[in-house]
Image (cartoon, rainbow, N blue to C red; front, side):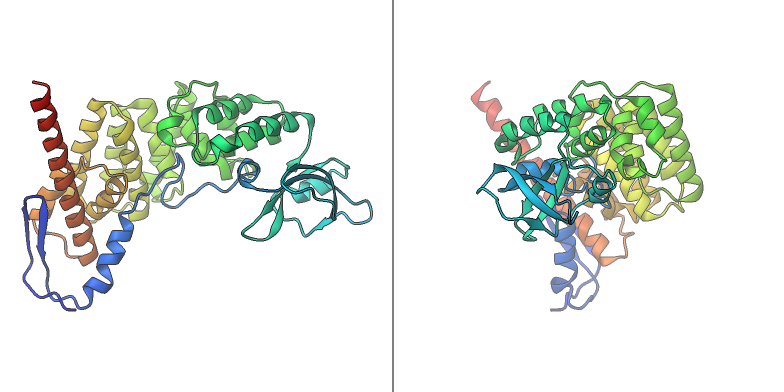
Length: 383
C-alpha cells in the first residue's frame, strides 16, 4: 500500500498526523521495524543495546528443575557419576556430554572434586555449574533457599549477597559474584551499599580475564569516589572522542555521570556530542547512558539531560531517532517537547527515523496528557 502525500507534521489532541512522500510498502516494512525498535531496551544494568550479560551458574541453579552433584569417572573424564541429587527426580545413570564454561579448567586441576550439574530443558543437555568447594557449597545452599523468590526478578537481597563476595579470597567466587551482579537493574544497583574493591576492579579492566566483565566493573566503579577511577573514565572518553573506538563507552558514560553528575554530563557533551564524526553506534550507547540516568537521577540532573539532548539533536539530526528509541523503550517521555520541536523543522529525510520520532512524540503527548488529567482529577478529589 502506497502512502502518498507531501511532507507535513501536525499534532492534534496527542495524535500524530504525519504525511510522507510516496515510499512504497511502508506499512509492511518501516512501521513494524520502527515499532519493534521502540520496545523496552534495558532491564538489566549492563544490558546496553550491543551487550547482554550471559547466563551464569547461579541462573542455572535458580532456574533448572534438575540439579545434581557428580564426579567425573577415573576412566573417562567426560563421563560423570551422580553423587547427590539436589533438585528433581533422583539421578542414578551416568551423565555424558556435559557443556558449559569452566570445564576445561576443572579437568586441568586433575581432581576428583564434585561438580554441580544443571539440566538445560531447552537444549536437553547437562550444564556444568561449578566445582563444589566448601565455600561454593555454602553459596549454593543460600541460592537454593532463595531460588523461588529470585526466579522472577532480581532482588535487593540477591544483590546484597553477591556484593559480599566481591572481595572474596577465591577468584572464581569473585568472578561469579561479578557476573551475577551484572544482571541487576541499574536502579537497584545504585541503592545497595556494599564495599566495592576499586583497585581490584581497576586492575582487571584491561586484562584478558577481566575484559569480558569490563562493563559491570566500570558501572561499579562509578559508585566510588576514587581519583584513579575518575582518571580511567576521563581517559577512556578522551580516547573514544579521538578515535571513535570504544565498545563499552555506554558503561563508561553511565559511570562518569554517576560519579561526577552534571560535570560528567558536560564532559560527555563536550567530548562526544560535539564530535560530528563519532559513529552512531557509539553515540547510541552514550544516549542510552543518559536515558538510564534520566530515569534514576536527581531532578536537576534530569533537567540538564533534557537540555543536552535538545542541543544534540539540533546538531546531529541522526541522533533524534536514537533518542526516541532509547527513551521511548523506557517509557520515558521527557524528550517529547524537544523532539516535537525538532520534528516540526522538517529536516529528517530518512523515513524510518521520521516515523520513530513521530511515534515517540505521539506516545509522549498521550502519556503526558493522561498524567495531567490524572493529576487534575486527584486535585478535585483532594482540594
